[in-house]
Every structure is written in structure tokens, then in C-alpha cells.
Amino acid sequence: MQVNLAQHIQKYITLSDHEIHRLSEFTETIHLKKKAWVLQENSVCHHWYFVEKGCLRMFFINSKGVEQITQFALEGWWITDFNSFLNKVPSAYAIQTIEASTIVSIHQKVLEQMLAELPGLEKYFRLVLQKAVAASQHRAKLSYEMSKEEFFLHFSTSFPDFMQRVPQYMIASYLGLTPEYLSELRKKFS
Image (cartoon, rainbow, N blue to C red; front, side, top):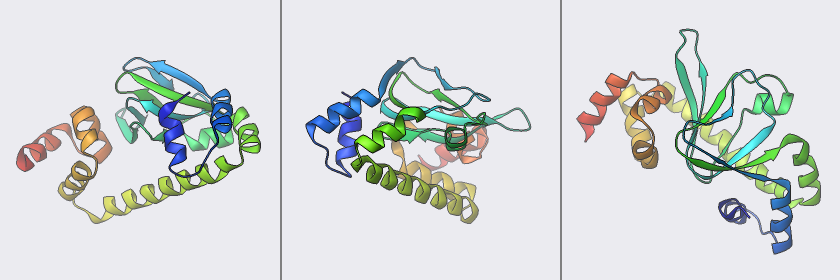
């Protein structure tokens, strides 16, 4: 059984041992090496992924041919391309491991059956999605309100794990900075 997933769910709802066992029958655990592809751009995303161990990134290639990271996911975080997952259309994003990772995958065909058999998970996923939308809205607000320097400080103090585990050029991409400017900011505030 996926220990981190079960513990994460238990923070929001209570599941019996039988329900936790049943949950494991609806999911697949995947062990991936560093830089492994979880989702490739232009392929349909059929899974929703929970990070048991490791770190992932979601990104797209912008009009200049440069990677633009839109999301990271550490242990206890979910990641997917929701547009592709829900509408069964080719993904505009790619998802890749940053370090060796263990993820739990739920296939879209299995999700409805799982929710029907384990109705408490409806509440869990609703709460997780509400938190994700709130965080996305907050990030968008900060990106308009804050200077690049303030945005870096906010990110580095709010998510110190990322600063330690994610390469500098990826953090720069996520924050909309050049790697050189990020390096200057790190020196300035260290």
C-alpha cells in the first residue's frame, strides 16, 4: 500500500482498513528514475499522479522554444494536466521527474468506479482540488502584485524544500527569471 497517499487521505477523511486496501486496488505504484517522462507533450493524459517520494515538474515549451515550468510536486502533492485528463485531448504540457521518484497513478477510467465504491474520496478530492485552485489563484495574484525580487523571496521562504532539491535553472523558469538573475538574488539574500 502507498503509505504517504493513505496518510495524506487520512488528514482529510477517515478510511477503514478495508477501504485503504480497496484504494490500493484502484491505483498503480510506479518507480521512476531521474529525468523520466511521466507525460509527454501532445499525448493524452489518462492519469492523475500522487507523489509518494521524489519531485516532479510540469512544463511547456513556449513560442521561443524555451521550457516554462508551471508546477512542481513534492511528496504528498498531486499533479496532472487537468485539461487533457478531463477532456481527453492532447496535453500542452509535459511532466518529468526531477529526481528518482515513486508515484501513485489513478487512471481516469478507474476514477469513477473508485469514487462510487469509496464515496468518502469524493470529499477528499474536492478538498484537495479546492486547495490547489486557491494556491493557483494566490500565485497568480502574487505574480501581478510583487516585484521579481519579492516573488523570489516569497517562494524561497514559503517553499525552502524546492530551493534545496530543484536545480536553480528550473526555479528560475518557474519564477519567470533568468538563471543569472536568480543567482544574483540568491547571493544578495544569502
